[in-house]
Image 1 (spheres, rainbow, N blue to C red):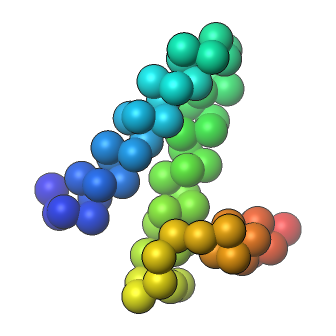
Image 2: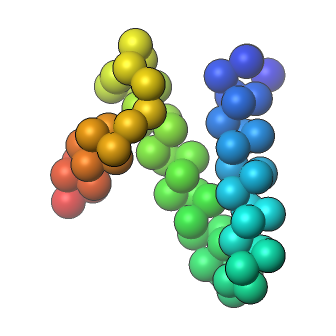
Image 3: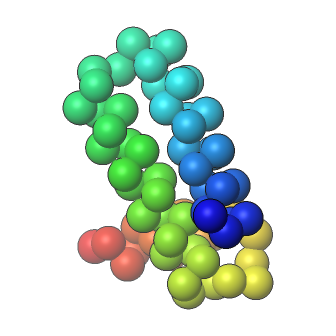
Length: 65
C-alpha cells in the first residue's frame, strides 16, 4: 500500500471511530466514510501539491454538483 493510501485509510479509520462514538447509524457511517475517501481521491487527482483545506472541500462540493 502506498504511503498516501495508508494516510487516507488512517484518517478514514479515525473518522469512522468518531462517528461510531457519536452514535451515527452504520449506514450513515459508511456513507460519510465513502464520501471522505472520494474527497481525498479528488484532492490527490486534481490538486496533488496542495494541502487539504476548506477551499478544496468547496471545490469538491462544486465538482459533485
